[in-house]
Amino acid sequence: MNKFWSPAIQSLVPYTPGEQPRIDGLTKLNTNENPYPPSPAVEHAIKHFSVERLRLYPDPDAGRLKDALASEYKLNREQIFVGNGSDEVLALAFMAFFRQTRPLLMPEISYSFYDVYANLFEIDYKKIPLDESFRVQLSDYSHENGGIIFANPNAPTGIAIELADIEALLKRNTESLVLVDEAYVDFGAESATSLVNKYPNVLVVQTFSKSRSLAGLRIGYAFGHPELIEALERVKNSFNSYPLDMFAIEAGCASLSDRAYLNKTCQQIIATRERSAEALEALNFVVCPSSTNFLFAHHRTLTGAELMTYLRERKILVRHFNKPEIANYLRITVGTDEEMERLIAALKAHPNIAS
Image (cartoon, rainbow, N blue to C red):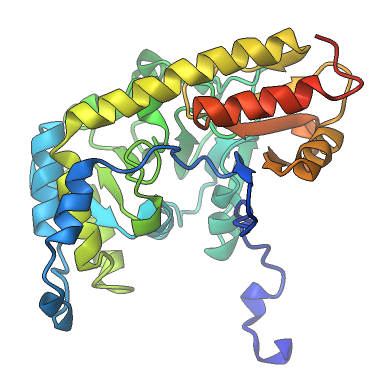
């Protein structure tokens, strides 16, 4: 039936998300979900939500959520955009800013949705290699461009970029937008939000899915100069004028009211991450330094595909990317202490892993 398809999508390769299987006894460490529930304030807000309100449309501007974000991050409402998950915010940003005559610059190894959006919107792009340590070197982003995008910390490597390096890039690159995708920033990196009032060409994108444990409600947002936010609003209102439902707005506001809970769970994940990295290194893994809620690691003698299959047979899911540069690596979500102990125990039982 593809004779009815538009020509532009004939060769389109969609993004492939991590598996979401429904299997009893599964240890799921493949999609970077938070192992802890949302703040109790979120549960309270949803329990006391009036179902009668659902006959009405939600606020198309999500004004309460913007005000809560503005208060939390010391910005003005006019500097804030919200959308249906950070993926939608990124898609709107690609439409609003990157359809230029010059190529978009992005890391060679990064979030694979960037390629998908560039191809979907027919945006020319150039990939910049990482260095030998899998680090994004922003000093390499000196080519003529119609925009620059990168994740900080990077995904799937988990390695953070210094804020000073981002600011140095903004000082050099003044004629195009620099988008900093901060999905994992709360787990150990320094946010570029502090640069929003200094540089009119930086857009910082974050999400409630990771550190705030609200992946199921799809809440994303962006910080930037009011003229950048106006462009995003223009595209959004030409595409979907009601992106966030009432539950998402209520839950987002409640989550923002509980900074203590956010800090507590992030510190729990960081502590588990560091212990797990040490345990993997003791099993002859090489682990990239992570500032995220996952670990990116390869074994010195066993392939990534073999280990992924081995763990899957033991009902432990991790993520493997079939790309030549990282084919031997596994991306392992940081779960609870018990889940990570189960992973380490399974690896210790492998006959060819030396401890």
